[in-house]
Length: 435
Image (cartoon, rainbow, N blue to C red):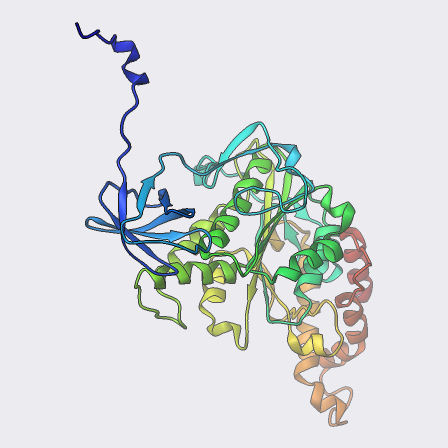
């Protein structure tokens, strides 16, 4: 007699797992069929030598397009593909502070991988009604005089740091990391050279800065999926601490390399390049990512975000720069010309703007900052004429004032890398020039 199985035990019966098979592959893309695949689903491709973890990045009728997370050595037509039902998740708490992790949340600092108590995913934060987001009302002191005085940032503001190579971008980020008033700092090093990861941590963050920091690194030699995942993980970690009531500073270096990783995925799927080599879909990923930063609900902390954006040549015609500028709450442009003159930080205040400044500082401060920018701009427009002796004092009272105050304005804009200037001192020094 065949024994009956009670209904309550049916769930304990092992059910066969549906699997697919590989029908085509190259170094970047694996094509599979044979079972139901879900977009963005993780899968395991089994070969006789290794298990390859991959992600479904596209579906075309019965075919699924998978991209591997890491390089693989062996794959065959007919290799088994096992879809995974679980989503990528991480366990986090304060044990993540002071740690250097990869996109999977695994330690790369020769310490045990942290195991926290709270579970997060790459998109775990609850979506906040736009009318219930906490408004921006408080200044954010970054310890850099030029920014505090002329481009004042706010808690919860999102700012772009637009720079080419060799202009002191990493050093300025390091100063902000060390001198800012943030409770928690989350740093994403996306697409950097391998050697630069250690250099940035040791030279720019330092031991004291690491005590309140979490560093997520996905260097240039990692797959585009790992670089994308690391960028999204940075935001999830920052959201976690923000929702715990902390004032969080998120630094992502760089948004451009996140866009480049999305470009690699899109081109692998066969999407044709359009604007300066970027397929159109790349620009649909940037706004949702940037909108994750900023303030949360009324009872949460703040999340101030600084994204570096690489610009070679004219940034006005770079599609990533243009897209980011349209979404962010301001941008700080670093000038190669100023850097070559030994002017540090090489902030071009004529091209830079903080859209939240007027709502968080006194009217008198705003007026002085605008006057300072105007005089600085007038001086540089007439600089060649002045240096050649072609300008006679008294012809233009405003230009006379610009010449008189130029050295004082320059002293506001320049600062050594070890000097910390708080917000109050920055404002006082600016006010003294215009007494």
